[in-house]
Length: 377
Image 1 (cartoon, helix red, strand yellow):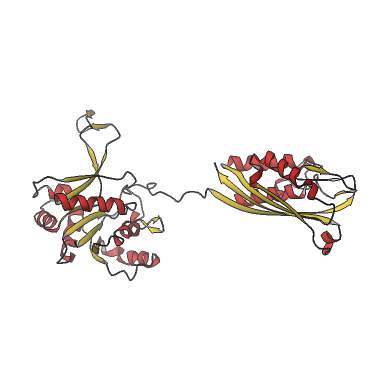
Image 2: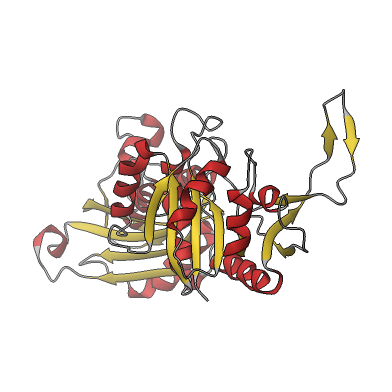
């Protein structure tokens, strides 16, 4: 079986706005190219004829090149008409001599799937003509004379691709003396046999208005990295991940100096694309003198929640020559998982030395790195 496709792309997008909707960004390319691509995957399709206004031919060529389809030999162009009917008529002379079936598809339907195309083809083989339909879900009224409710029980919405035997399409359009809004209206003028009906696809919408294009979803998982370091001075202990660790020194810091917590906060803010904690909790703001870093972390978590995110995983590496941290790892892991509201299995805490290199290696400072994954709720 040999199949040719006609893509109707001759419209002017008057209802969409100032731009031609066919070249609006969609998927990996633009609306029109996305409408073409699924047909390239159908083995029986040997030619795809795009009926487009000549002034947009160069724009289509550029779009095909961006999609790495500039050398696709199956794609051919014909001149778009002032009506859909004329666009199809103009394309028919480019149909291959040996084509058995013709598929006609709206260039403004970029979400067509191979599954729907194959359903339509199978139905056309059985009936000669195949039409994808979807149910009416909204109430319908006739407003030609006031407002008159219409029973929607027997009504369906027409989609494309439409498919029919070549001779059926050619006979209908060659005899068409008026402009038809859809293919089945043209076909019914000359074809009186039963029409095959298949279930359409509710996602296979026709782009009509600005806003119809489905934008890529906001990333559901984001990752950020954070780093912090504080010098040490004589004192009565330090806090790491909210755990008090007895020792004879303390952090030189604006807050309590909990280095790994600061790294986690910066990791969260980084994942959100926001500025670090130095901007959020300035050192010249007296409100944060001696502040509990765990409470500051809670404020950062609220910022993430307001944007629809929560922490899903965190990995922290603490770099300290002293004190010995291994006895406190489990406590630090537990306190971190409790505050973040995630399982301890989603929290990684490790400690290492700096091999006596630099201020950290000399025991004059402690640093921490954190990698944080946040997930959209």
